[in-house]
Image (cartoon, rainbow, N blue to C red; front, side, top):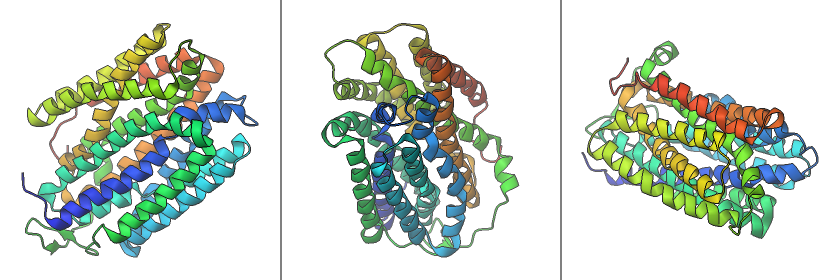
Length: 396
C-alpha cells in the first residue's frame, strides 16, 4: 500500500483528532444523560428522555448535506469553523438547562453543527485515492477508541463536575479542535481533487440519483443507521438497569471492564478482516454478535457478570463496525461520488441516532427496559438480512 506524503499524514491524523475531540463530546454523556434527564422537570417521561438522548441526531441529519454543499463553494475550513461554533453554542445551552425541554433544545443546537461530511470531504481533498481508504480507516479507528474512552470517562466526569460541567468540557474541546484545524490541518486545494500523481484534477459532478441507486451504498447507509439507532436505544434503558443492580461496582468501573475487554474481541476480528481479507464474513459475523448480545439482554434477567458479558460482545462488534464502515464507502463508490455518498451516509447515521433514541424512549415508556433490547435484537436481524448482498464492487 502506498505511503502517506507529509501533507496526507497531517490531514489524516489532524482530521482524525478533530473527529475524536468532537465525538468525545457526543459520546461521553451517553452513560449519564438519561439519569440526569430523569431528575429534571419533565423527566418522568421516558419518551422525552429518549428525545434528549437522540435529538441531536435529527438536526445532524437535517444539516449534514446543506453544510457539506456550503463547504463546496464557501470553503471546507470556514464551514468547519461555523459548524463547531454552533456545537459550542449548543453545549452552553445544554449546560445551563434547568428543564428537560431546555436540555433537548441544547442538544438540538449541538447537532446543527453538522460537519462530519465536511471533515471527510476535506480529508478527500488532501489525500490521493490510493491512500484514502487507509486515511478513512485511521479516522474510523480513532472514532472507535474515542467511543471506548468516552463511555468509561462519562460517569467519572459526571461524579466530579456533573453533566453541566461535561457540556462545558466538550465546549472547551471543540475550541481545541478548531485550533487543530487552523494550525495543523493543511489548507485544501479548492474546487479540485488530487490525482494519483499528487496533482489536482477536475472531477465531473455526480447525480444524487446515481448515489441513491447504488445498492452497496444503500446497504452501508442502512448499516450505519442501524448501528447508531441500536446504540441510542440501548442507552435509554441501560443506565437505569445498571443503577438498579445490586453490587459494589461503580458505573465507571463497570464500563472500564466492559470497554477494555471489548477490545479483545475487536482486535482479532479486525486482523482477520483486514489482513486475511475476510471483510464480508467478519462484517456479517459482527452484526450477528450485535443481535446475539441484544437477545441475551432482552430475554434474561442478568446480574453484573451476565450484563457485562453481553455488553462486551456488543461493544466489541460495535467498535469494529464503527471503525470499518467508513472505509467501506471508499470501496463501493467512485472517486467523483464520494462527497455526495458521504453526505447521505452521515445523514443516515444521525437519523438512526434520532430514531433510535425516540423509539427506545417510547418502548421503555410503554413496555420495559427488556423490551428495548428485544426491539434492538429484531432491528439487528433485519440489518443482517440486508447486509448479505454487500460486495466490494463499485456501482452495484
